[in-house]
Image 1 (spheres, rainbow, N blue to C red):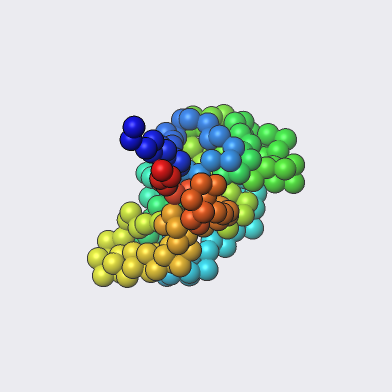
Image 2: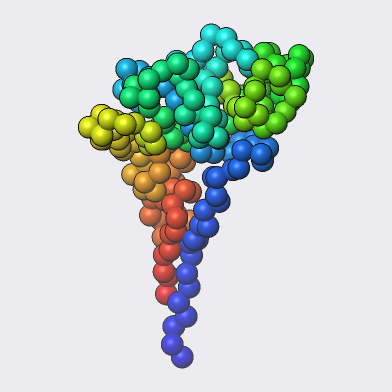
Length: 208
């Protein structure tokens, strides 16, 4: 009788990180969002991260949106030749929905244990005339710039994209290739002893 060959390992099926603007974000997930800024600030954001706003509709934090059209409106009153819109990966942490004017946690959500505040589209927040959703993230370390989606200056766009790739590569896990936005616990495979990362797409070892 031929020897039995046993396999140990896994194959991951990646969960989609896309979320339409009307869907309520789930706590602890990572989602694609956007942020518009002035071209003069773009390099600093990529290399040093976002500087939180000291105040705003949702208080202190970094303002982002899943609605790219909304992000394209910012910075307000800025010439389009000076505008950059970033594509982001955002770890929302614990999310609080703010869906009306004078919400008791409108500016104090973080002090009450939340990492992100979310205003749904077409909510009862009167100052958002467009009806588009908005998010505010307390900790800029939860935000990773992954691409440039708007920049009319082609040379500057290429420069920014190169800088983003360099930054992302510096935080890549050597085993799975993903960025280290969340800690990767490297350990030995229980079967073959190889070093493995739980975020690897697959791992297989054979024992006869």
